[in-house]
Length: 207
Image 1 (cartoon, one colour):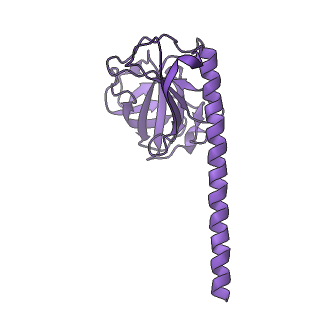
Image 2 (spheres, helix red, strand yellow):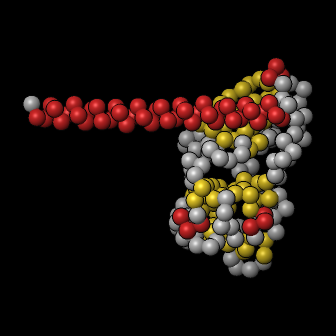
Image 3 (cartoon, one colour):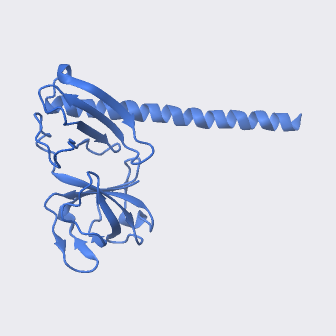
């Protein structure tokens, strides 16, 4: 009887935890889509011109919520892509085309959105007043002149965890996977490791 009771308690506990996770996911998903749709409306993309629309949670890789679609009147090879990274962070618009690294879209990004390139990398040491990263790879498959190797990011603010909560540089530990948003005009100091000043770093997200 005791074993059966423990079994039921364990089952109830598992169901409760799973239910909580599902509710949290659905809430975040709905919030993410609402934020993306608000961005699209401000961008001026007519809903009647949108087709091949998909909204997914990229749980296997980035953990971001992503909306993709094509727009009538724009080139058929251009995909409008929007990323929701977390609460408190801006929706990111990253149009994609297999024929161009920077496709010219009919509906450009909102004027206030900075020009950035998303890189993914890994911390090779614990953070302190700076971040130490290597293996930076561009999300669109080109390095834009950013050579391989180690880099010191002089960034102490605008660092977030996967849930969008702001964290400090010393919360980043060796081996952490990072998303680094760098200005398109990033200048690298030719030292070893290479150094990137804070003015070129839009934000950093720990995955």
